Length: 182
Image (cartoon, rainbow, N blue to C red):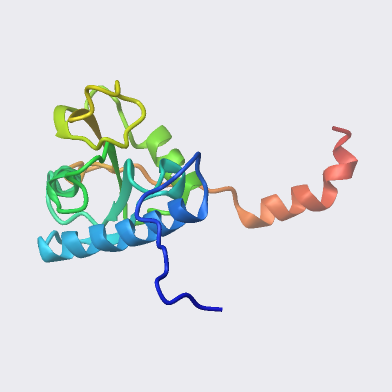
C-alpha cells in the first residue's frame, strides 16, 4: 500500500499513548540528543522524552558527571536547546547508572537521590505552546518549568553506595519460601 500524497500527523492528538505520541517521542528524543551534542555538553549517556508526556512536555537525561554543577548544566542546556526551549515543562537529570528511558529507576533516583529543597529549580517564564491543555486557552504563551537534579552531587567526598541483597541469601529464601509460613 502507498499513497502519492501521504498525510503525516505533525502534532499529537488525544490522550497518550497513541502512535503520534510515539512518533513525537522518538523524533524529539533524537533531536534533543543531537542538540546537546551540538552544544558540546559532555557526558550525556541517554536522553528520553516519554511518549506518555505526549512526547513533548518532559525530558529525562542521564549524565556521567565530570565536574561540580554538571547535572545543573545539563538541565539548563536542555531548556536552552532548539528542541527543549519550546513547550517543555520539566527536565529530570539522573546519573549515568540509570538509563533515561528506565522509568522505574528514574523514579528510584528521584526517591533516593533527589532533595526537593535543594535540587529543584523553578523557571517561571518559559516559552509555551498553544497545544498545552494545562494552561488557559487565552494564556498559552508562557509556561513554568521544573528542573529536577536527581544525581548524587559530584563534589560529595563520601557518596552513598548501593547495597544489594546477597544473591545466595536471596536464592535460599526463594527456595525455602514455602517453609516460612507466610
